Length: 272
Ligand SMILES: C[S@@+](CC[C@H](N)C(=O)[O-])C[C@H]1O[C@@H](n2cnc3c(N)ncnc32)[C@H](O)[C@@H]1O
Image 1 (cartoon, rainbow, N blue to C red):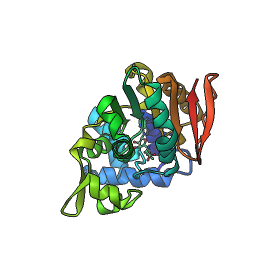
Image 2 (image 1 turned 60 degrees about the vertical axis):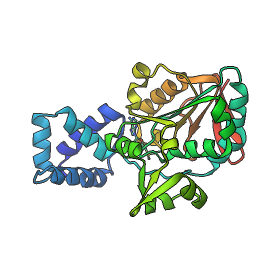
Image 3 (image 1 turned 60 degrees about the horizontal axis):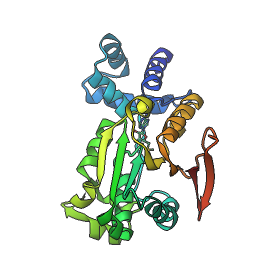
């Protein structure tokens, strides 16, 4: 791919979403854009580039962002954080919020829904008594329109349900439909999905949360964006709440009211 085209698309995607395609990732960008260009009826990337430069419609921009995001996810990803939620965090939060009888959870880069649905299943399975007394809101957002569409549908293929989902949960919380599995309506009803760009958090999210998951998304951002997004999320966390990153991720900055806690095999970030 010509340098000019690579620079054009990397600048565009970084400005809009924060995702940084560094040099060396040309092949990935090229493959993804090529596929999109052909699916839209263009001859190739060059053709597509000319069209985008002439008239970048919001629809086209969405399709480009959609194509250039990595939506890799699976149920109960990394397992340990869900153990920490089950054994430590949820028992503590239910106790702490005894007066308000309300818990607010945010899966802030939820991809196709496996992360928030894993939380919904965990709550239903182990905290059902609380669910009848407390209002538990699970807010789940992602920049990718197609990922949110799939998450809202809640239909997964055999390969997707084979990844991380215990068989007992599959049988209990999904219905088979041909070769696919549809998640139970009661779980769907626990989650509110929305398209949201993490760069827009300061101006769009006014709510405060007891638990925020921001897993495997900061890794795609440059240093500056990483810091800004992290701080914006930290601001949305209630005092006494927890923020979870991916297992291999570290906070890009240490706010003074942050305490690192090790719960079993997982590290979490607690707001004092
Ligand atoms: C690798 S997935 C991680 C999904 C899930 N958190 C997990 O750990 O399994 C990263 C997600 O971040 C989303 N993403 C990337 N940039 C974003 C942005 N600026 N705002 C919101 N979501 C973004 C992508 O669309 C993708 O679905």
